[in-house]
Length: 347
View (cartoon, rainbow, N blue to C red):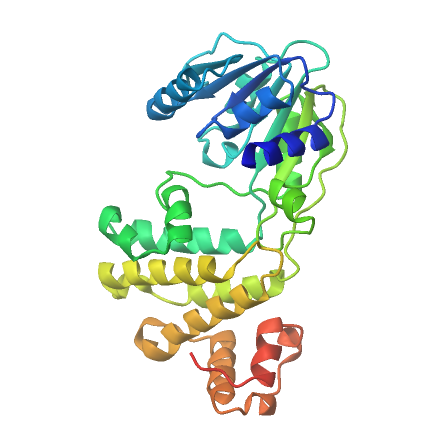
């Protein structure tokens, strides 16, 4: 059923671009997209991954299930040339972790056949709620914690799945539309199309939590279509939470606190996010989690106009008196602060 949904997605967003042709699935991971491309009509799929464990596992799967038309290759274009060519190269979820983006894309571009060949790129969108969580948790955890195997036990299942990538990866890069356009243009590529994400395809609604850029590219020096910015409708409140977290000196809390806060943030996030189509509750719960640190460990928190307002609002809201606090004009549009004015909260 899952592969069927993947096939449906590929046929919808890439109709006519890969059927009956050679596809490279670069950084195939578990191999789901390689299988989906083959099932959806690719004549040949070359599945490439730098991790030898992934290569062995997927090659074994293909052998045991008698999957034909898929070749599994161990390789890293930043370390050595890969002697393969394709009409379509699928790069899904790899770019955010690449150390040299320009060199990476130039290498992949050289692996395209001339004429009617495409490269499909997936990039994390800057300004998302996911970026807030990942960057703050990485800053806290990677600076002060050293025992992932033990700390991992404190995470709920969904947080555990994400933590393997979000906390351990040496690099996680986020893009805005302009930076991504400049990058692909430098590499001799132009944007042919920009598609909806797989989550949006499945759920038939926009994802407010995380909306990666998914662009289809072709080799050309001419300007392509502009990339549409992917922004959260709650960007202002995401910024507020980020500024509050920047005021907390986690170095003074030690490794135990850093580990606990990382787990708390990730469990709060992934325990409330659902399918990402409505993030109001997740934003509010993350905000209350951060404010609990301000109220419980004031010696770790620097003061600012924003933090004093947030503390005052939370304390008033705990007594059902939030409506008595007048919001300064610069914060009048905040969903978080408006909600504190109208609710009695327990944190």
